[in-house]
Image (cartoon, rainbow over all chains, first blue to last red; front, side, top):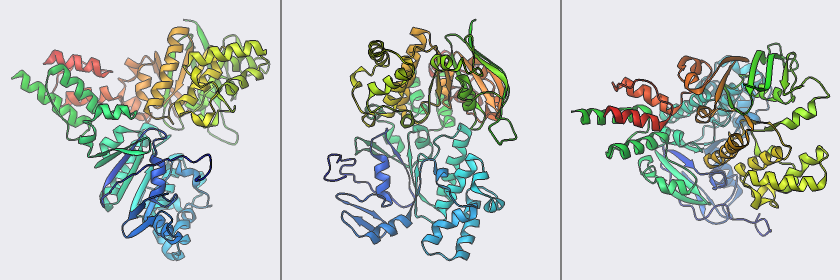
Length: 276
Length: 276
């Protein structure tokens, strides 16, 4: 809201390059600017200064509307509680809505719907059902299928597991990770969960007070515990535990992966060494 | 042990549904305890929470709070005063235009005289550590701060029980700690009974007792040390294992001879140190 008393700079001087095929986790506490940033990535908001470039499409401050549209086609956003946006009478129609809007023929859109419903792990028979007769988890999958139907080059996930129970959370995250792996789909995950970031991301970007505060590989980011705590965050539990073990044992172990199994391996090896 | 709430053989159907959301649930809540209720999405745990202060009434069975019964219209207002609820979304429960108006709202509804009202507002805002924000508007507060104001609004009614219905699930890690610490202090210092509906297993671990809900039925009830050893039960209820338990298991698989699974990182580090 430029030029009004409500004007507030939500993002400041962000420079971030994301390479093709990356899985990036975007972390920050509430109000850190991460949602504002992703809204720029698909042209829901236009920068007041600077530019966003995605592939060959560039959106500049004061740029043309046409650029917005092509940016939106390239970046698919899965919003929080995406199932709230379902509206059509059948799952198939709901999934076809996006492609049809961008001028895809009915026949092609139908084929696409059949393809993406399989990608999200639902049977084809779901296509003729009303989305409102499905369970919450299934509805979320249908909404995700709707985003995939646009064939995005970049998939942006805004806290996609909010409100799910632990089992549902793992299921949905594994779905996104396999989409990323199989199709080399560039993925940006907005999350509060250091655990998810440590498990899935190649790179982590930490937002704090509207600025890009830290950016790097998980191993680099997690070695900055104090800086993370200043931004209201912490390292994942695996790293917390290893720090405690290092303090107790006087060792200087480090993790290359942040899974519980990797941690168990490191700790048990250090015990065996001491035993010898 | 004195019971503050008794749920007796409660069965509940949402209108138009053929399968009950709650099936013959019986549960005692002890005065002054911290009781965590966990379960998968759709397990009936939030429905159970709404039974506790008469937001929903059972089709069969009864819910007693102190000497009152939720099904009796004459009792319902006293029950609502005794049992305060904090809901999931901090933005959906802020009714006033400032922090003090918000707390005053509930008191006005109960016809508390002005002098007494001012006294209670000041007192309850202090108990949640938000006295510096008395005249702030809601949009200037973080999610965690809004939830603390909601708790102050409840405290002003002099309740016996606070029910947290996934009250921290939309907050970032700092907001979550803020709210839990506030409630913990009320529980420990003032003996207010806490019932927390949660997906946060680490929070459930520090509860006095845990109830596991599954498909509308009470699947288990007990102290966390017992409940969290029951791997299959947790899995079938859509829940994950807490971090330290998972790590204990992984270490055993690596051949580390732990005598049991540990619930906290500190206990596990100490047990490992003894093996070194």
